[in-house]
Amino acid sequence: MNCPPAPFQHLQRMTDDVGLLEHAKGNEPRYEHGYCVDDVARGLVVVCREPSPSAELITMAHRYLSFLAQAQAPDGGFHNRLGTDRRWHDQPGTQDRWGRALWGLGTAALRGPAPEIRSESLTRFNQGARARSPWPHAMAFAALGAAEVLDGWPDHSGARGLLASAVAVIGEPSADRGWPWPEPRLSYANGAIAEAVIVAGWKLGDATVLRNGLRMLEWLLAGETRNGHLSVVPVGGWGPGEPRPAFDQQPIEVAALADACMRAVTVTGDSSWLAAVEMCVAWFLGDNDAKIALLDEQTGGGCDGLKPAGRNGNQGAESTMAMISVLQQGRRLIAAPR
Image (tube, rainbow, N blue to C red; front, side, top):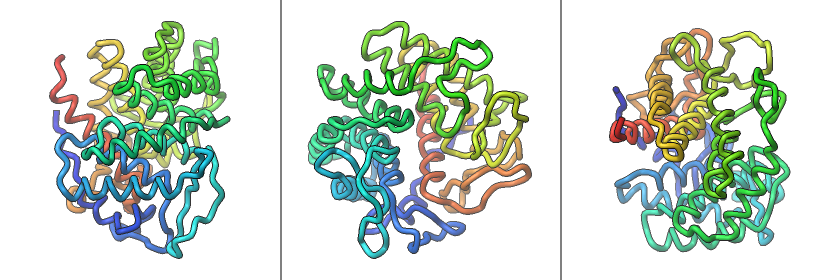
């Protein structure tokens, strides 16, 4: 399989001494749009996943962690948007930004490239894990962070509690074989929902929950495969009976699917899921509905979306990190036994 190493030069370009800028025009950062916790948390995940981070990546991990620490409220919630005026433009809450922050902190607590990063991240995770969210995606992201913590601290009660709460908030998949999903419509990062259920069933020893998660992922993957390549849910979501392919397709959806399928391999030992990870890598390299690569090899950036006959040339933080994440999983795939 062709899978280049994950490039970090554009992510470095998007990172300054405050944090990670959200948007870009082409490959040029747009400072006027400021920063958000959602993206900084993703940044912490991909940097801490890198097996041999450079000194510059370690500096970025410190910076991202500092940003999250400043965004966290005493009750465990998080602000999201910081303007170029260095002011938070919202109130702390437990929306997606909270879940993604816990995902980043849990990952850094286990895999952080320096002892002080691991220690501070666990402290911040513990504070955030006291909160709960009513939103399924937020709870799914938090569950992924909790799973990382449980890999290092198997008896961590806060992490186990988060997993149980995530299962309750996400809900059981529908009994309808044609739509075995807990929501009436697919939206974004759908793989994270299935992955959270899988990892909760695994870590909590609940075989029924684990089966539900695997069934959800199997159905999602089948629905997002067309003519031997991925054709994923578009930015506006997808419901029963709506036509495919649909656009604009989002890199974050492919990244969530790759993570979920790699998790399924880890949990079940079934290497057949690796073929799906390979399709995720291929989607970024051009095996998609538009037959165009979303990885810009010259800049190291990831394009913001797939259009019917091309791509969005802007290379924002979210899409770049989705690309990095998938290539990281692709490199794991190369090393995985078949």
